[in-house]
Amino acid sequence: MASRAPVLVTRKIPGRGVELLRREVGDVDVNPRDRPFTPEELAAEVAGRRGVLCLLSDRIDGHILAAAADCQIFANYAVGYDNIDVAKATRRGILVANTPGVLTDATADISWALIMSVARRIIEGDTLVRSGRWTGWKPAELLGADLVGQTLGIVGAGRIGAAVAMRSRGWGMNVLYCDEVRNHKLEAELGATRVEFDVLIRQSDFISVHVPLTEETRGMFGAEQFRAMKESAILVNTSRGLVIDEVALVEALRTGEIAGAGLDTYANEPRVAPGLAELDNAVLLPHLGSATIRTRGKMSEVAAEAIITALRGGLPPNAVNPEAREYRGK
Image (cartoon, rainbow, N blue to C red; front, side, top):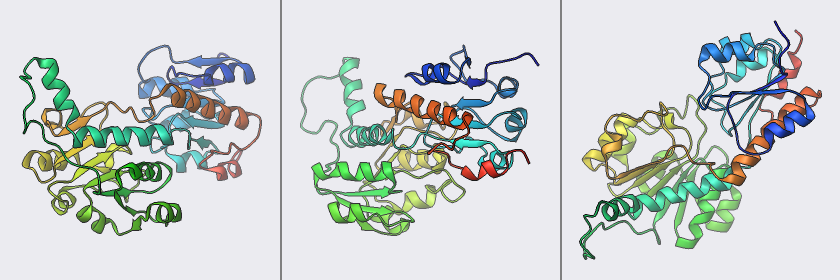
């Protein structure tokens, strides 16, 4: 094989990440197309690389990892890494890193943008004005939901979920949360109450989802859960699309089982479930959770720094499988 750049970046990214890699590592190849590599292209591209900066749209499975025999690290340009088979990477001695922390505030903000947009029917109002069909102020036009004093349920009270909860102080909301780990800060500063999942979905007026995608969380919101929720409830998801059964969600929204939903992620991106886009009580964003100039730029730096550290023989602080180094060379 002809000599190739030691690092591959699978998509053009904003920020200084590529510049850092070129300065500290040397040559870097960046996907010139504004689309993900196909699986076949990706397998060919990772061959001979020492490091890969990949995106959540890249499926890093056993086939790709086998092709990346010389690779020391895959740095994922995201906080989630369910697109990577971490167990197989570990057995091959390949580190996996993510970009935790830097996108907390941006994602928490987009969660609240969705809550407000659904509750106050912002998109419907904007569409009405732009269409020229608005005929003036009416007492009963586009009546929405109040936030002050209502109950906010946080499913997953990690960095992002906790940040969403803390932002509820301005509305004096009652906060419930469910998480495997008790969040003492939320309890001390907000008076939040840790409850079981089934209690949270029954009692919450607004539910914001912030869990990683695991076998336990996959499809955790389905027909049974929608039936248990209040008819006035609004569901917001900025975690992973597969935690929601989108077909069941469409039916719940269509029949009025729940009042509304705001989504930033989907089970089969960029496709959405049939019927979802036709519903006025759903606000749909194109995966904008971390999409601020500062955040996306910082993500590129964190991912690049992980690769630089690994290629110099160190362990990146954001490595999710540090035990992979024990398998290297076996």
